[in-house]
Picture 1 (tube, one colour):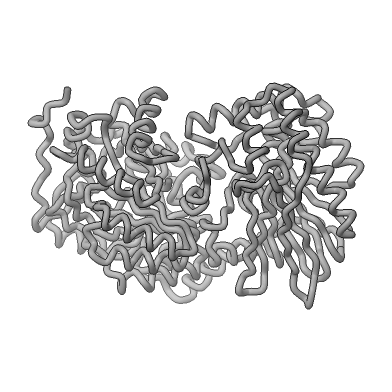
Picture 2 (picture 1 turned 90 degrees about the vertical axis):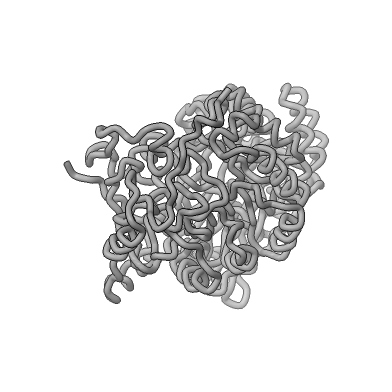
Length: 286
Length: 325
């Protein structure tokens, strides 16, 4: 069976695993199994990030995303965002529980001083505490809502990210209820992003692994059909080098090289998670 | 109701790593990762980097050269604004007027712009709206996910589609996807969204300099002009090249005034002089027409107040913060 190879059409999106796999939560569906004890990847310092930003700009990058783990566990995150925003727009993917009003105000002043947009995505997995906390941990629903309220009070319009583990995400009426929830927290122009589940990491124990047939063969992806795959336009920087995409950072084989320039070649869709991206048209971008 | 005590227990990762579906010693993961991707040799790296910036030939003939041109976009069936622009272009002694697409949508009587385009000699680039109408597509292809934005996009598209004759659709379908024009010695690539995609949004706050330089490299042009977002801006790049979003004629720039925007371009001192100019027109008359056609009051409110009431989902954080709704 031949495996389709995805060329990098352009380096549009550069991700930083800025907190590594270290998280203050331990969500049961986390595709990278982030938790307080998971140090598969360590966080990145500003000094580690600077050369990657300069290199990304040289390669024509359009936008920068910061993820983890929980990015706000990285004490340098505000300075890192300032550095990134000198190059282009930045988005932070956060679980929201560390967004105090003081921190939100600091982020406001960073955004106001920047030439490019600063945006946030906050994860939630239910419309009430029992549904959400079953996945994200006891007490997190109230803490996430408080974080969103603080961001909104500081003038941000965070995107709410919900996975398909949450039943309401699959219906128009359910999605409308999430938008209403955001409005109730003071988010004036609410947005919602629904992500499919990847049956890797912690999700294997919760929802089960991929079936053996969930793999892509050469003839399943048309030669002109790569634009829907984020690996045709993204790479992710971790403390151990540059990986193909944010979903596969726990696959050693998905490490493509030490620097972004080393990773400009094609990547084979050999992982089961690639099947989800192709079939569901998933992208980690907003 | 889910039972919290049934939450699967996550493995303790101390000294261990997740590798796919397995938990392995951390050192094993790190060793395997270090071996996986290697540093490429200097020749390969240089070639790969060059390829990202390599010009892509499009075979599009170059029109002109002209001394001074007017560029507009996003007419959205606003024939009164287009008529005002054509008067203004004559007053400014422009040699040519180009429209970067989206003649239809949002406004009243979509075919009313056609005679103006013909009489004014307006050279049009195909936008996503023209593409969708010509192909009888089910929607405008803006790709909204917000249910409210989608509802209004659908109303707008359905109204426009119902009021386009087969002849007008054929005209829209025959428009070129891109054009090239020379102003003085400078060559400008004219597109609707971006040189890469008809519906790519190039907003000021999400189009960094390095990215725009790369687009110009790939386009093999001294400048790129686009529309699609409805918000005007101009980036004078360090390389001496320009990227211009000419904004929209059809609806105001979400700035609380009913003015609309276009670009006046000429060559001065071997560089492009780019002027983004506001223009007033009889927006009250347009509102009367829109109401007579039964178009949503939300659309009329935008024409009168200058604030967008729909299609807000696509705005990046910076542009959203300036928005009233």
